Image (cartoon, rainbow, N blue to C red; front, side):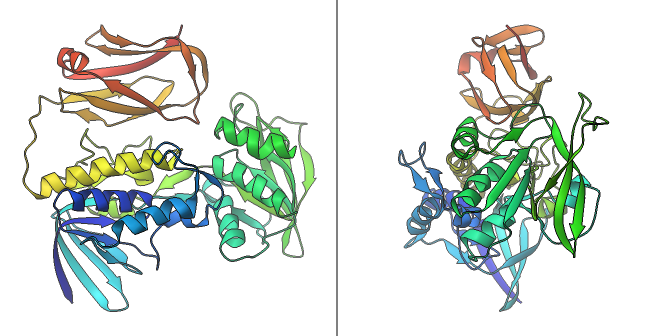
Length: 416
């Protein structure tokens, strides 16, 4: 068994892991970056469309171009990269047990950054009834087939879910000469970014049908031949008499992402039931001291630029913890939210200087105002504007607000 000593171990070599590793190394820590695939880059390697880097690099890049910039940043640094290496366990005392073709290794780390990303929900997780057959896959898998493997996954498609991956794949399939019958969305509003609705559906005249879902999969000769779709009511239940049969040979699922937190649970990390990601404080430290979390394993982001910024904060915090640096902090301020806000990150704030809180609403709010309260007192109130579920919001709390906060603050969105 091989044993290694590092200040910081980063689990995951996607955009979050690379940014965290680079920042920790720049802050004077010895860093191990562990990736289960043979290349760094994560999901970005199959995202050949443009639109990445507009915030972070002030330049429009494809996914591989964005990833390659960080691969080059890492070149020549002292970061030790372990590729084709699967992490089997992370212990509460920050031992990382991993395996590759050289055998089992144990990395003893003073701090650990969790950056494992997320996975797509499958047919089994959303329980679509009907025949078991070929031709049912997630949108990300279809993206890998086309962009990486150069395979044709089908010819006539139905897409369930209006998440960004599904919208982008609707455009990609159309550009490759395949037919996209329609995109169906269970909710009464789209879940993807507005720019993707415009660029991927409207520009290609692909219909989007809201409040509609797939209620049955129909097969012929072992492959999808059609799907049954139906309208749903306000309780998201299929409405009798609204079903129709849509011929297709492939059903793509774009029905949400789930953070990959199995390793986190093994380390004793407490998870937020709303996000399925870790509960963290304003330094992105989890409930286990010395274990930090960032990127899509913490909560699902809509822009990789935001992932990078968050990961750099986690990397800097992990390096400081490993070096024994103690930050001047105040008493803990718990962060709560009321519906329609679904969650906040972080859940606890210690800083009294400045803090940012990320949140996402669960339904559109057309003319609403964000209010921050503590003990019934209004600490901050925003101007009336629109909030939509597809955009993650950032609230900056200045020192004046933090110093007035008691032991808790609550975020509310109410009609203006």
